[in-house]
Amino acid sequence: MLSFKEKFDHYVCDLCGKSLKALKSLKRHYQLHTSPKNYECDLCKKKFVQRHYLLNHCKTVHSTDKLFPCHLCNQSFKRKPELVIHLRLHTNIKPYVCTICGKAFCDSSALGKHSKVHSNIRSYSCEICKRTYRQKSTLVFHRRIHMAEKSFVCDICKATFTCKSGLTRHLLVHSGIKPHKCRLCGKAFTGNSDLVRHYRTHTKEKPYECDICCKTFSRKSHLEMHTNVHKEKKLYICEICDEVYMKKSMLINHSLAHSNDRPHACDQCGKFFKNRRILLDHMLIHTEEKRYICVLCNKAFRRNYHLKMHSLTHIKNIVTEN
Image 1 (cartoon, rainbow, N blue to C red):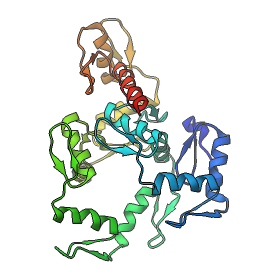
Image 2 (image 1 turned 180 degrees about the vertical axis):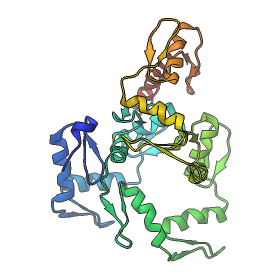
Image 3 (image 1 turned 90 degrees about the horizontal axis):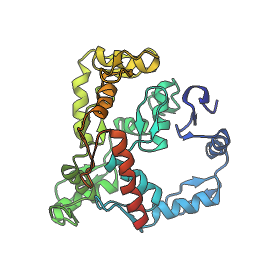
Image 4 (image 1 turned 45 degrees about the vertical axis):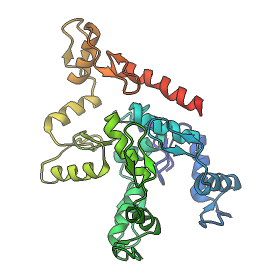
């Protein structure tokens, strides 16, 4: 089976989770998994079905040139589409919406991976313990359990790492070199990832969201610590789409997405809505309050949708400059 068009209104590859709009595109993409890979990269030995995929791989993965910088946080990218997706993190624009549960994402591949939550397909299997997973990234993370050997050792403090890149990043701590400087406050950091995390203290961004209670965090480690809160608590699971919630009230509110009930009415105009949050957002139309503020230019809006549309102008301007 190649797709789930009837259920998701788009086509999802059952091998990697990639989401595509047309069946023709999905069939062409499926060849990447099934056709012989005769083109091999001389640097990393990765193989490809077609030569232009190999050339694109060499250009984007092994090239040191990063021609598309983000003017907001100093991160740079090799391809313009990567910059566009990254900019959505700053503006909180998530144009790809799951038609089953309403959850939104910055890019189509994330939506494709999420769509597997609503299916029972587990395409990725651990070759050691045979556990299966819906996403490749989850399998990669799981494999660390079996990787007891840490062959890269720091000569200074004897810290060990499973990969050379981890050791290389660690050695900067001992060198005292901090090449990554915040252009807003001047604070310097050893690694670029540290600088990116620091910028969130200025922008108040919280890109990591808990799947259970929707609480957001500025760091992935904080989210991982937070998830422990839910381990000892009773969880409420939607029988239709398997979404998990911490509170029964959240599950009841979510269940409205699967029905046509609109129990929440506006006392100003009589319009009905599925949940109270949408009602409150609507009621701002009847007031002068503008609670949604652009973090880039401080312009205020009554509705979050208008803020997101406005944020697109910043993205277009930044991309045009590049």
